[in-house]
Length: 311
Image (cartoon, rainbow, N blue to C red; front, side, top):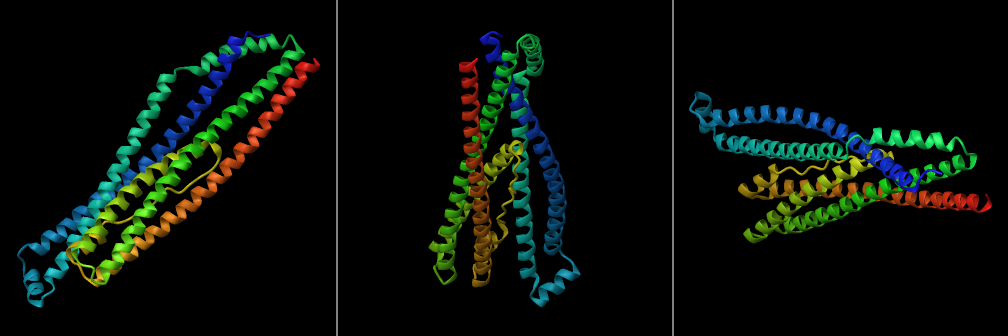
């Protein structure tokens, strides 16, 4: 029989190989995501340049500006253009932050793979030697098959548990984001009906908290989605809350813009709620899969024990 230390090393190497393949798969997915984000950053940068030109034209001296000033609509149009500049700037900043996060994730994964080394060669070396030995004994071959199945099941259960951990984190972050949006919505209603400066500031404070919570939830969902790559599941990770209306509301405080802010908060609440349902559904499926695989593992261990006892 193959020495126990070599058997143990073979198990450890197989686990490392699975992890390495998983990280390589995640890198490919991150790189695809990075390509899309870089294209979006380019589009937003061009859009921002055009929006800034529109503002500059309105602020400059020209016959058209003079006519618009006399007609009384220059100030209104200028404020609208400035709001559009702020909106694009916020989207651009978020996209750049997203790009930075993804590049860091790729770097960390590449470091982990490099640190692991050439585990495949070592595995093949030990596996070949073991294969040569077990061919000499039918009983050894059967035991090897039991152990192989056990290794595969344990590794898959570990992957499911890692995905479950990431899913629980995403679910918790989504709950925090939902609570922050609920608070913002409550103070927003109060502000709409004459709540005054205090309610307006409290509403914006809650919106700041909601923006931060949504960013954290997006990151958690992204991590969850990557963990799901090797357990055959998928999750949309796009959640968006625009900052444009917040700025419009702060500088042009009136019922109409307050109403638009409330509509945007409501949309974000619905998005967060939908994501929580999706994550909850996948978490439930993962737990069910873990239960099934654990039962399958118990059966393999029982059969192996029975084989040894009856041999």
